[in-house]
Length: 112
Image (cartoon, rainbow, N blue to C red; front, side, top):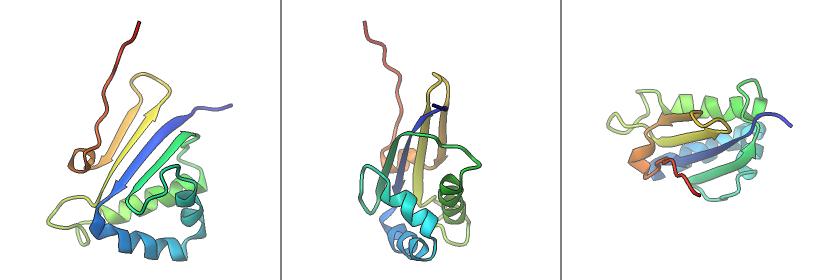
C-alpha cells in the first residue's frame, strides 16, 4: 500500500534542452520521466505515486530540480520549473521552484 501523492512538474521552455540532455545520461531519470502520464516536453504528472525521498527515481528528479535551481543557470533569477506534490493528508502540499510563474496552483474544494 504505502503513502501516495500526485506530483506535477512544469519546465520552462528554455530548460527543455538541458532536461533532455540530462535524461540521456541518467537512465533512472529518463525512466521516471517516461512514466509520467502527461508525456510532454515541459509538463509531467505522476498520479498516485509513492514519492519517497529515499527512492532512486525520486532522487533523480530532485537532483535535476536542485541543479535547475542553481543561480548560475537560472534565467534572470527565476527558477526554470514549477513543482507541486499533493499528498494524501489534507495539509500535505509541497511547492518547489516557481509554480505560479508556470500557472500551477492548488485549491481546496468541499462537496456535499
